Amino acid sequence: MPPPRNHSDKLKGSRVLIIGGSIGIGVGLASAVLEFGGHVIISSSSAQRISQAIDRLRSLHPHTRDDDDDAAIIGIPCDLGNFETLTEQITSLFAEIATHLGGPNQLDHVVFTAGDALPIKPLEAFSLPQIQQAGIVRFFAPLVVAQHLRQNLRPTSGSSFTLTTGGVPHHLMKNWSVAQAYLGGIESMARRLAVDLAPVRVNAIGLGPVETELWGGTKEAGLYEEVRARFESKMTTGRVGEVGDVVEAYLYVLRDWNVSGSIIRSHGGTILL
Image (cartoon, rainbow, N blue to C red; front, top):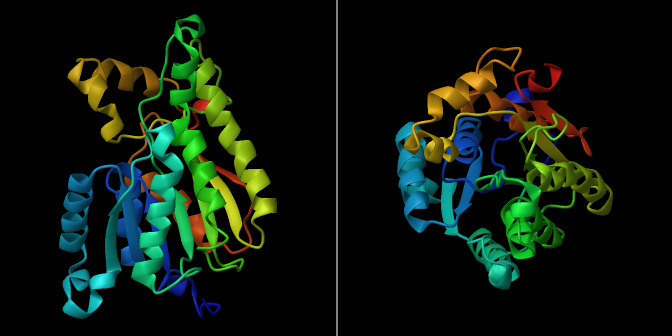
């Protein structure tokens, strides 16, 4: 992409792949990209959730319903939850994207927001397969995605790969050893990939508690209010973050063509208390 004339143009016409883009932070970011004139490709393990997300995005952004703007939103399923098929799934995802976009190296940004429930239990309670499975979506999948980026991202500093880490790996909590091993590893991954994939920029967003669909299990168990209150008591902001808040952190790393190898934190001050 040529250098933009002003700030509001930095995402105009850009092509942004959001892996984990059908719910939560991913679909919130997709909406923001569309608002700034970009095009989004959303990927998720669920074709149904992708369809629902596209309907929601089209209702929020009527210009995407125009017959001549079908490419504004594309949805492609990709299941990241199985070690045996992980590479095959991601290779297929990028092959389909290249078909849609007319060839390789046509993406401007790739954002990885996919996640699953964090496994929080005593270390001794994990088997080795459970330890491996705990990192497949949040840690191993983005590494495999990175292996495909030289052939799919435009090779300029205007392009970027953005990772997501959470659970505040610098805030030590009991029974989080497995989860935080992977979450902390994502920060190291971002810094090293920034070197290996240069000039493409690589960064990570470090999140604290954010209200998303991943809280569903807590709500079903009747623990939502208790857990939320406990989190908020340890946040200087006094409130759990919302999708509309933390999306701003992602927009920053997409639009600042000088930021790379950085961890941008949006955690409500959790690590300070």
